[in-house]
Length: 255
Image (cartoon, rainbow, N blue to C red; front, side, top):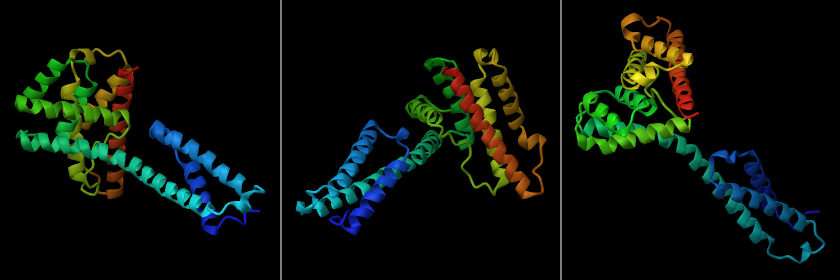
C-alpha cells in the first residue's frame, strides 16, 4: 500500500510520531506546542498521500522524507535544550553566589549565602529592608546589591520551576554534606524569621521552622552513623525535606 515510500521515509515518520507522542510540551513554548500539532497533521497527510491513487505520480516524496528527517532532528535538539534548562538554572544560581563571595569578599560559604538569600525570597519584607539585611548580615558593600538582586531572582526562579538545589556537593563526603545542610538552614532562619513570619498562623510552617532549627544544629547535637548507607539515606532525607518545605512555604506565600 505504501510502496512509493522508501524505508527511510517509514523510519522518519515512525520516529517523528514516536518523539512527538512521547514528549511533554508543558514546559515548552507556545511555538513548540504549535509546531508539534502542525507536525502531527503533516505526518497524517503523508500517510494519506501515500495511500492515494495519485501517489504514483509524485516523484519528490523523498524530498518530503528529508524534511521529516530534519524536523525530527530539530525536535530532538529542542528536547535536549529543555532538559539542560533545569541544570542551567541551578548552575546560574551557583555562579552568582560565587561571584558575590569572590568579587565582594563575602566571608560566608556557598551554603550560608544560598540559605540566607532563600530566606529573603520567602520573607514578607520590602526591598529597602531586604537590602539593609544583605548589607548588614553578609558584610558586603552597596556595590554588591545588583548581583544580590540577580541572586534573589535566580533563587525565586529555581523555586517556581521546582529546580531548587540545596546541596550539590559529593554525597560521599558526609561530614561536608552535613555541615552544608546545617549552614543552609541556620542562615535561612536568620533572614526568614521576621516579626511577620514568627507570627505565622500556619502550624505547618511553624513546624518546618522548628525542624530547620534542629537541622541547623546537626554538627553540635548529632554524630554521623558508622554505616555509610544509613548516613547517606538520612542526609538525603534531610535534603529532600528542606526542598519540599521551601516549596510549601513559597506556595503558601503566593496563594
